[in-house]
Length: 329
Image (cartoon, rainbow, N blue to C red; front, side, top):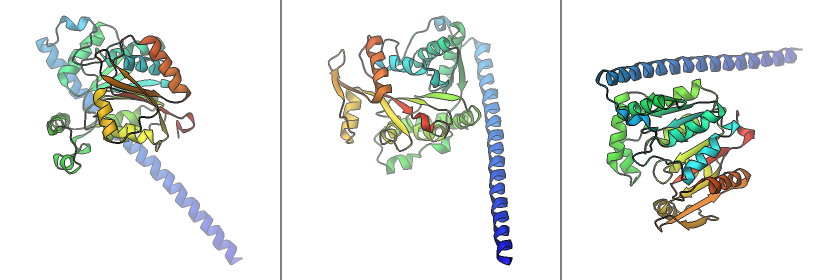
C-alpha cells in the first residue's frame, strides 16, 4: 500500500515537473516575442529617421524610375536568376525573405516580380543606408511588392572578431570584416532573429548579405518552422559553411541545384569538395564553370533554367530544399 502511494506521488511529481517545464517554455517564448517586437519597433524608428533625412534634401534622383541592375547585381537573363524565379514561384515558397537588397534592381526585383504573380510580397533587409534609400524609391516608383527594411541582419557580437579571423586562418580580406563590423556597430543590433521569431510563415530565404554574417544568419533561420527553400549567393566566400553543412544533410536539407564560376571551382576544388557528378562548361568568355542538380526537384529546376536563361554566365550560387517531413518539425 505504501509502495503504491509512493508510486502515485512520483507520478504526480513528474507531472508537476513536466507542467512547470511547459509553463517555463511558454514564458520564455512570450519574453522572446516581446523582445523581438521591441527590436522591430526600434528598427522602424531608425528607418523613418533615415527616410525623413533623405526627403529633406531630395537625396534620390530620377534614376529610380527604371528597374536596372547595377554594381554586379543579378540580371534577369542569367541562370541563377532563372533558378530564383522557379523557386519563389512555387506555392510552397510561402512568404519571401531576402538578406541583402543592395540597390534593389537585381535579385530583389526578380523576387518581387515572381512574388507579384503569386500575390505575395518580398521582405528584404539592407544595411547600407544609401542603397536602402535608392531601393525604396525604386520599388515605390515601379509598384513592386517589396517591404524594404534598413538594418543589420545580425549584431556585432554575432560576427567574428579580427583575432578570431586571424586564428582561423581565414584568407578573406580583413578589411571586409572591419567594414561589416563597423556597419553592424552603426546599427547597434540585428533584426533577423526578431523577424524569424515573429513571422512564422517565411517559406523562402535568399541569403546574400555580408561575407561574415552568414553563420549567424543561418543560426537564426535554420529552425524556422515553415522554411522550405533557401538560396545562397557567393557560396565561395559568404555562404560556404551553410552549403557544406547542407551537402552532408546534417540539418535535414538537400542541395538540389548548384553552380560555380571559375573562381568558385578553384575554391571548392582546393577544399576537396565533391564535384562529381557535375557538368563542366564554359562561360561566354571561355572560362570554366560547373553546375549540378540532384533529385526530382533539382531536375525540374534545372530544366526551367535551361529553358529560361539566355545568359549562361554562372555565379557561385545554390538552392537548398527542406524535406517536407521536417517542415514544421
